[in-house]
Amino acid sequence: MKFTADSAIARAYRAYAQRDGVFEKIAEGQGSPFVLTHMKVGEVQKIYLVAVDAEGKEGYPSEMVTVVRTDVVAPPPPGPVEVTQESDTVTFRWEAASEAESYRLYTVPEGKKFRLPLLTDETEVETKNMLPGRYKVFITAVDGAGNQSSPGPAAQVTIR
Image (tube, rainbow, N blue to C red; front, side, top):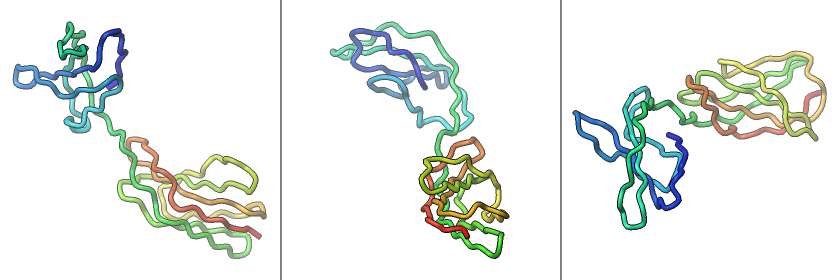
């Protein structure tokens, strides 16, 4: 949950949520954002914030806001990529990542910093007529909410 911390004397902020008609503290922190770990993905709650001064006194409550917990956790990275070449066909294979719904295959030519990925929902991709040269190849996993993992182990390959 992100908010604008606009109090000059606040040393902390507290978030309160209503449960069974009673408001209880659900989070406290030095500023924005708060990660509301007590909520399940998709859960909706009404929340308000208060600023807290150095003596622990709370200020006036903010307006009530409705928050929905979204999935912001990336899946684990996929396993190492294996690259084979047979004539003009190059095959990329890797170990699946749990929670992944799709993958991004990056083939970055030597001397370059970035290349747009190939998107796939498989753990094997074949391509033809790839330009000869040296490449750094790596894969990332993407879950159903669009969270992208860190790259799996990279491979340095030479395409003939």
